[in-house]
Amino acid sequence: MSPKELERIAGWYRSEDGQEYEVVVAAQLLRIRYPDNSIYEFVPSGAADFFYNAGNDDIMFDIKPDGSIRGLTVYGGGKSAGAGRFAARVAR
Image (cartoon, rainbow, N blue to C red; front, side):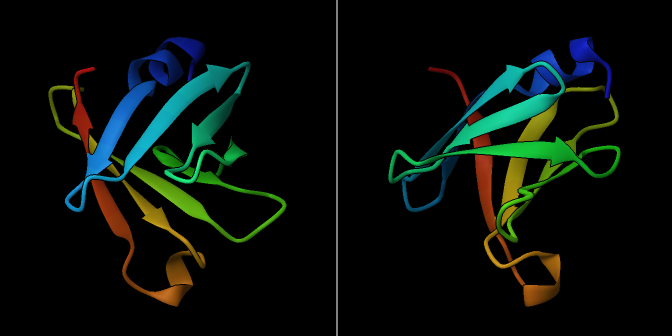
């Protein structure tokens, strides 16, 4: 993703149970603040996918055809572990 595309996905996301994730861009990395206030840096691993190098978390952004961001899905044990937690993009 280009720096402009990365900036577009920065913001707040909220899961159905009310937990919030904050996405901040730092160079070509994403810093994501989890609901417990821990912060992890993710590196790009695909067109809308990011990977946490020190662990096994994956983040996948749901980008609509018009370019707007619907939300993100957090895969706590990696995509191979199964279903992730969806969080919709919210204004804050």
